[in-house]
Amino acid sequence: MRSLTVNGYSAKWLGKQFPWVYPKEVVKGAVKAGEWATVREGAGRVLGTGVLDDGWIACRVFRHGDGPVDEAWIHGLLDRSAALRDVVVGPDTDAYRLVNAENDGLPGIRIDWWGHHATIVLDSPSLAVLLPWITGWLEANRSPRGVHLAYRQDPRDERRGALHPEPGVLAGFAPTGDVKVRERGITYGVRPHEGPDVGLYTDMREVRAFLEPTWAGTSVLNTFAYTGAFSVSAAMNGAAETVSVDLSAKYLERAEQNFVFNELSLDTHDFLVEDTFKALDRFRRQGRMFDRIVLDPPSWSHGPEGMWSAKKDMPRLVAAAARVTEPGGWILACSNQGDLSPRDFRGLVLSGLERAGRPAQSLQVASQGPDYPALSTFPEGRYLKVTLWRLL
Image 1 (cartoon, rainbow, N blue to C red):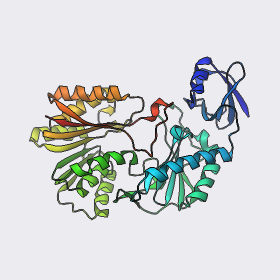
Image 2: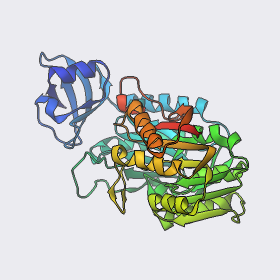
Image 3: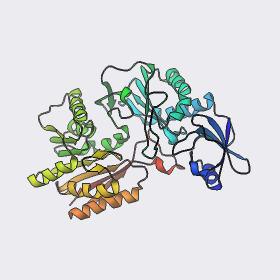
Image 4: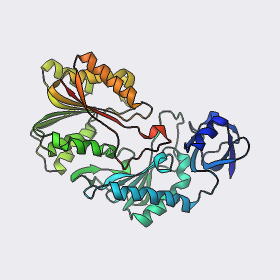
């Protein structure tokens, strides 16, 4: 096993159970991606054991302090993760986050469960060294019909090129079409073999649950709609009409299919392949207003006007939505950008409301559900910011 010596700043954070070592914190030792290393401070004391990487993170620590990381250790972390989900995931839900990376002691590794399939999402190819242990645990404890591998490339990682192993099926088989899963009794179609984005963001489940009693009789505008989970939930709970807007025709076709899966009539539900800003401006010019507007833009996306920037674009997005919100109507504003603090996000929303001249009442502040736990020593763990506003 290799040895890595880190500076005092890194030693301090590792002593607090922080899971990462950055390249600039390494003072001694060669970093070879995919190999295990003992991390030490200058005096030689062992701080932890982790997997080396040659990207924007030099080492991900899987065990703090002195001690081995072997199959039994990793299986113990997986057992602990599964025990939480067995408690917090309801009986009418079979789509959820089984392992939430750093927050479950498995940095850079996410596992999502989709009915009878598992999708393992790695932040880096270096973590493939753990795949045999993880796949073995899944087969022994969950009996999946398929185990699928995908990668989630962080924008901060400048590496490009082939991924080894390549994304694909690790065990079992890939489904030929949509896999139907249930969230609080509602059916959605997902594609576990097309990860990491398979068609449903389960971190929003508790937010959708909170809104269920409030949709009845309302007109709903769902922007950045993806495959329409908020639209389907609204329609299933009595919304008079929904409008789902997204730049991708492919995703909106799947949104429409989700309506069909739940035997919902499409008569009062529209699907618009359009840029959200252009749609909001057109609604303003038409004088069209909505009772509920969902704003859930992706953190990293390209649109007609370039790369999305929360600091630049969120205030004008909120302002544009506020101009087409009925008096007494609600705006749900969300961000899943981990490096944006809740305080800063709230400030961006307030700036947009002020720009539109619409005072508002804060009704709810939320984050991801309990199957997405946030580790107290990992600041980025509480990544999802959700604020609900009633406009006056």
